[in-house]
Length: 91
Image (cartoon, rainbow, N blue to C red; front, side, top):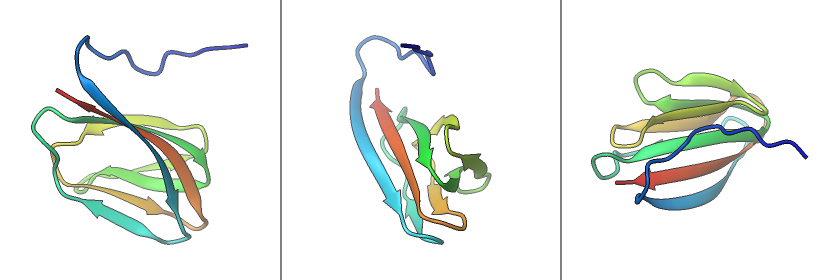
């Protein structure tokens, strides 16, 4: 058993947990959520280009990123289907 802390969250915020599935080349553009929302994304299979709409990042299986969810953001499966776990933390 091994555990790696990816990000600690402040006490008290609300969280939503999502499993994301995108077909090859599929994109999801998301409008900003409520102010203070933070998204935590871990790619579990495939490759994604994700994050703020004006500066998405290339991610591969096992990669993690955190970004503000209160700005426009995007998720795109690069060349193959992609899967990820997303935790949205609300203030």
